Length: 325
Image 1: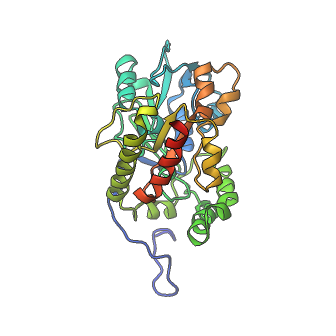
Image 2 (image 1 turned 90 degrees about the vertical axis):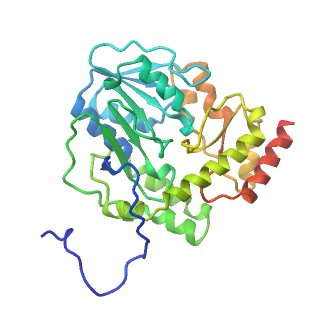
Image 3 (image 1 turned 180 degrees about the horizontal axis):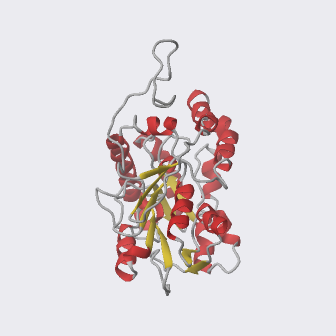
């Protein structure tokens, strides 16, 4: 029996966490991050090239650089659908389920391209079901208070790393600081934690992260996000350039307000309301189309997560309505 498999009895107590035992994506392979999972998948499948959208996190480009896999780019249309991509033999295509709101666009991709060569990036769609395709990726920390972790659901045989990630303890500073103090106090630790996940060889998800994920009431998280999004959508949809089609199965990352009022992000930040930008480096990417180049700056990602109530959201909505009127 190894030290990991044995259990000490008595002594001091650990952090007490409930055990819900209703994990998401129970059949997924578990890595220390979704980018590490993508790296393992690339090494297993060895595509001749991968088609990527221009509008994508650089973390998804990093594994392609590490494996020397050629990258081809495709454009999105105004509905965030793939405009065109001519997949040659051995090539893959990656599509992002943007904001967790692009289920119909995912269906469109799977109807137009060979499913066995399509990877769906659900980093922004944690609750979406795995697609019937080559692979689906998930990044729990985009939705939950965990330090790291990534899920990979795939038909491709992938070698599971022998070693576990031992860095999770060092990535928990911002989680504890925000709980004990506030968001600003922990931001530097958050940035360091994100930086520590770069250029990493694939590892198994840490025991700590698995245990944290096993303690989360996913039904409660799902219900609150859906409720918050519905409220924001009711108030802001007539001002939004993007038309959302969603149902009770859709659990959004945020409420993306396309063509948001100029200065709204800065005004909200002054009130300690933080709206992330996905992904600012696209605006300066050489060769990026105008539509994708404009998206990071013109899209306001209003939080709708499980920590928020209607009382939290009403002042945000009123502030935006005052600027949109």
